[in-house]
Image (cartoon, rainbow, N blue to C red; front, side, top):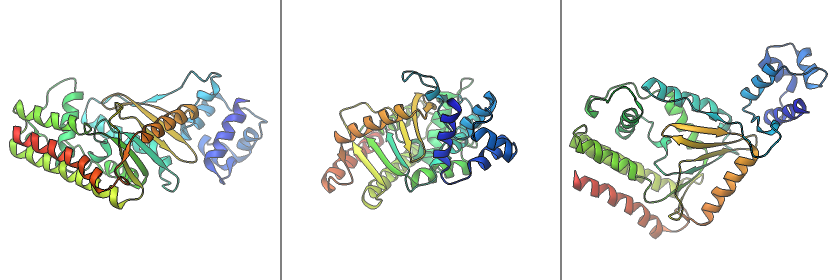
Length: 308
């Protein structure tokens, strides 16, 4: 029964591809051996079943026999720059199944600025990496920001950004979404690790990012921002397409639990949709509402500039 259910999930994910060819290639067995397994004449070994589930990112929750238990993956701890770059590389591998942009959707509960916007080669991104490494590095406190020259950027970062940019994205924001970034700028300036000139450049870069997002709400049909001031946002992310759903729940700054469990992902989608019903769309609510929202954030940036 379990093997049949596993094969059914694999068939759903591969579409018109040959099931026997897929199984043979992944398990490194002959076509005939694969056929015996797909025809249920032979059973998968435990290791084979795990290998297939891992390759196709199939949740094992459905085999537990209860809807209240989940098998989840978690990201590896980040303590060094190398760990952080590995985090983005592994994220790209996990999200590779969503490269098909025709049917893929993303829902992002943006408690903070979505990290897809702060992993590029910009001074804002460099500052965010500096902050992340200060907060995550358990061994030492980093030098001043202007001396921060560790390798924080790689082509994998750009590929991750490009993948996100191509999705049908729905983000839920409120006017506190940029507060953590502003507080970080103010904090490192106050303790003397961030020069005034660098702080001004970072704030300007943040303003440019917001202007880009404001323009995207007008120009990109596959990008939407909803404003919800009624709930506490939590940086959870749902990726979904016709083959798979993946729900990411944060448990630390760069720590996420991930599940592909169909029921859990459906519940999270329902919750996102409920939040959206109680939110204002910046895409369709008109220039006035959009300007009011973004002007609030521009004002917050100017207020920080004045206090430096």
